[in-house]
Amino acid sequence: MSDAVLEAMIKQLMSQNVPQVSIGWQGGEPTLMGLPFYRKAVDLMERYGHGQSVSNGLQTNGVLVDNEWAKFFRDYHFLIGLSLDGPEHIHDHYRKNRGGHGSWSKALDASKLLLDHGVEVNVLSVVNNYSVQFPDEIYEFHKSQGLNFMQFIPCVETEGNSVANFSVDATSYGEFLKRLFDLWLTDFVNGVPTTSIRWFEAHLFKYAGFAPTECTLLETCGEYLLIEHTGDVFACDFFVEPEWKPEQPARNAIANVAQLAQANELRTTEIQPAR
Ligand code: SF4
Figure (cartoon, rainbow, N blue to C red):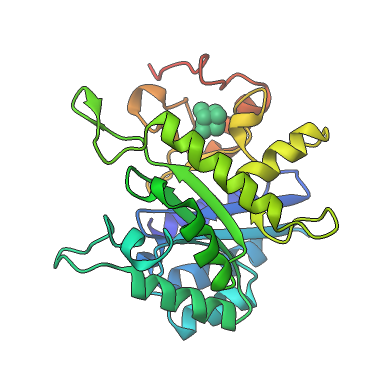
């Protein structure tokens, strides 16, 4: 993302008439942009803000995270999503670099560094055809590392016209979630959870009549926007395709797309392809 796009994006975001602005930085690997990029981003938030609260989240594999990053995340209250799939044999089963070496130790070092600096960390674990066998091991490992805020996402990918063999199948994932739920419940103390599993909490919120934290549990889409590194704005990360690109005058693309989203004109079934 160029400096010009960064500034236009922050300026437009901060000009929205909302009390809170939430930004989630994702890649690829967003730390590859370097710390100066994020320092500039928070400077721009301060410059263009007018009293709103701003929350920043960043999803990382942890490989580049060092003391400087950790201090920055702490100072600006970034919520860090750390990709860590559990113990070494599970994480490194698929997460290998070009040299064939696993990234587990770097991700674990990052988690310790972040927690030591007082950064809020939400561990994000991908559940694939291998890791799905180990709900107890993954849950207990995260707990043992002080990573009590957990999020799990099923790996479902295609290869050609069929499902990739590393994907998790529905039945196995269901069994995984059932076991995880029991583990989560066992750790309640006086009726209060001592660990956080985002998917279960989202259901709890919905059951209690509050807005769930997962868009898939909402009645309509359009609760958030995705901004590409080019500055193009889309309704959702699953629709970043030219044919799903809403019309967006470059000078105020965010407001334009946000208005459409709020008017529910960007529901996934109703997006008008660009002409
Ligand atoms: S299409 Fe996008 S916004 Fe809608 S539920 Fe799926 S992920 Fe969420």
